[in-house]
Length: 165
Image 1 (spheres, rainbow, N blue to C red):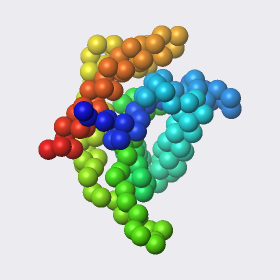
Image 2 (cartoon, helix red, strand yellow):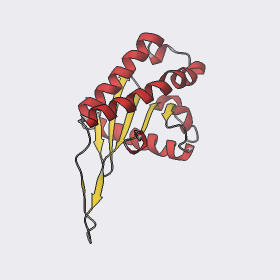
Image 3 (cartoon, rainbow, N blue to C red):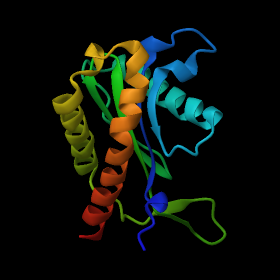
Image 4 (cartoon, one colour):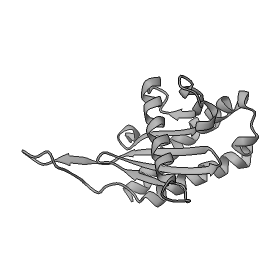
């Protein structure tokens, strides 16, 4: 049986302009997979990504597209102004005996392939639902949930297939 949980950590879509005030952080999150993640963990992950995107924009006019930590790889895609799609993938990691330094095992597929998965997911969404910005705010959360829940499973399967090959 395929265990996607060990590969794809999360997939989410956010718009920072939807909840600009403190205490409104959940309004920014249009979709979050997996559904079992606590609201505090969701806010922390989205907050980290918002900070990275904002920080990187001071250095480049091009939007940020990737971040790698010791244990995770974050792939960012900005399909429309203020809308961000993020795919977080766990990096296989081992620690050396008697050492605080670890090394990745190199079993993660290329970031460009993961980026292309996000682009394809958005293109499919846009084809069936239209652009994010054209969906009324009262409908966008439900629309994203209904569309991207099955898509997140497809992304997980595609990731597994590419990683297997």
